[in-house]
Length: 404
Ligand code: PMT
Image (cartoon, rainbow, N blue to C red; front, side, top):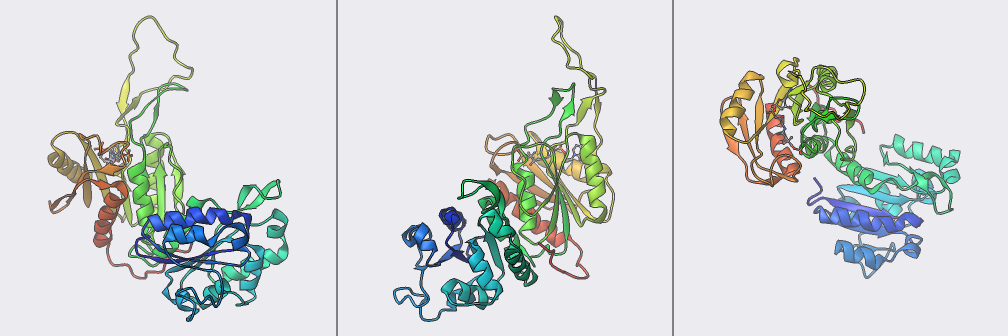
């Protein structure tokens, strides 16, 4: 998503300016071309040399900096940008932008760009809550600026409160989402499931599996980055919730079924990467089962087949975790569950399937076309699946981007 994107990163004079180094680093590592503009106050907090080294590109600190390749045409950065991000943004820069003042390179660039602008405020709580700052932010929002945060937490004053720069994960997630607005899934609603359901045995034990949720979360982020409204129905995982995605946390297969049935009422596609437990104890014990001298027998029953039974005007995509007869077994599931696509997941290798960062899959469609992919990162697998989902969706009547 960020590869080859040109991003202006504006940095202003806040103690949080040091965090902009991590933002610049993550964007650069993801393949973006990051052009940093620092205000006079920002360079009191962190050196432009840091950003020069991180981005490998010139850093602009003055309006007419003759040493910079951007100096003569001072709107060139604005024109080249796919997105402009101001992080951290002080009350001062927010006030100047709201008033349309262009007396430094950053304000000039923000006011001159046609690219989307993301603002991440960072300041003391009282300054942030001040009605003047709130009015200024509301004005920027009314002009389609995307405001991220601020977050609660430790502030430079030594107090705790609202005003901390939003988490870097939130900022990067929002940048991806904004860049993806108007993508090929704009106006679509995609439901994704992830994780392994947990079927209680007693109040402290359950039956589950090794699903980490990584595959499903990658699908949710991938769909978000193509402009879709995304609902992620997830069984418990240790992953942070994806930014810009509606997340519904569930525990059991029955809860997942209920949530999927509710949220697919207006969905365009359901992609089930979750590893739903196939069996559950017929009755969970009310109290913790005590250790006995003899063995313990659990009586199990089948769980509902969510993907096979959910109905509606959307396309269904399943995953099949297989350790033998990959294609044959997956084809059977595709037919049995009435799917448009099935992603046959080879779980025999240690770098594919449950818990891994990479995956080896074969995508099979209803016509029997088989596409065996090499070992890829889960996000790359997600993108390959979403390429096909986008092609399978009927042409929409209108393609209004989803509001962020
Ligand atoms: O979460 P990760 O660690 O990243 O691992 C990813 C994964 C291996 C879990 C994922 O890529 C995967 O293969 N998910 C499907 C695992 C699975 O349960 O496959 P299955 O063959 O049992 O089920 C076939 C399909 O029916 C799946 O889409 C499943 O979500 C769905 N199903 C299964 C059982 C059930 N009761 N209801 C269902 O809807």
